[in-house]
Image 1 (cartoon, each protein chain N blue to C red):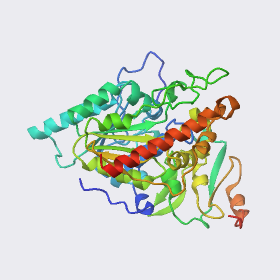
Image 2 (image 1 turned 135 degrees about the horizontal axis):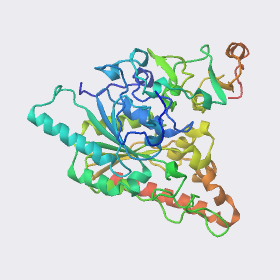
Image 3 (image 1 turned 30 degrees about the vertical axis):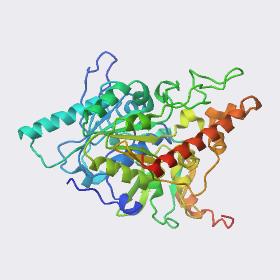
Image 4 (image 1 turned 45 degrees about the vertical axis):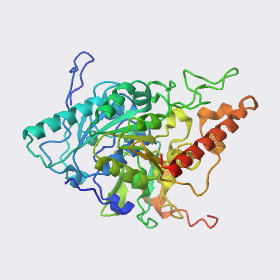
Length: 130
Length: 318
């Protein structure tokens, strides 16, 4: 969408989230919806992040605490399984790591530059004190 | 479509397709969007939404983007509730005239507002909606401060909190007035359902939201929304703060039916001292200086007496 100057905005504006029509939004998964240019689903806030969550599925028990408490709809859960983190929309707040109940945690924060595969390979082991 | 969505456990709940999108501009760790997601996912029906001016509105509708996958309107600071009440009236009128294209879809009308837009600026409008008996739900995202404009005090700001218009210092402990009891005021409208919710108790929250959707008439929901910027804590601790607020009974979870029957819906197993809740937040940091230490005991006494009052009301069913 072209950038507009401060005096070129419409006084009232209507934005359409979808191209075309969807009859049952609540029954359509996000990847099956045809988002229009004006949906923030098409935008990214990845550059807000200083640290990123890394998901290690070996320890995940699919409790979905991270899904319900994620403020940015960035935990992708399909068919009752947690399948990953949406890195376009994650702001790196770290709530998912805090609420993760497993030992060791199946989500941990690493710096944005960290290599996911090597971090998963050197994942911390079980903390006996907890 | 109008039957209540079955949500037995979190796994089942997680199959919901979100109708609120990421890449909104809310702060990392903001509880607003957690509350909004829990409300929207509580139903499969169509939604007609509004938001009053506040963090939620300015962050989810930044031209040319919108973060909402449902009909959503914003007009002004005060009239989010009346905007959605107007839509509800129009819907009913068209339904009566038989001019709806899909009359069996049964949409839900929800208005979101911050505490500033509900406790202060939009108070008269909300009161009007409640009195006229529209079939709407008003959800307050209560972060106890005007967070969007830089942390001015609102009438929801609790005593002792440092806000930019009531700062703490050598002569003041910050905000002097205690929080407005909005729950009682709304219950006094004798509307069918008034409830206080917290996003960490998602099951309690979803149950209350579904109850609110099921009743015929106006519903008022007050949701505690810890604000990482103005309460001054680390973004990752949002859920910890919410846990503290419910377990210290600063935000007791209860519902009032028809303005007459009060039910407490969550009793913490281990009640946390209020001191712990205050200590976790930067806005209460000054209360731990010798000069203002007496405030902590006052806080505890007030929270205790409020909890005793709620229990008495529940027992007496009034």
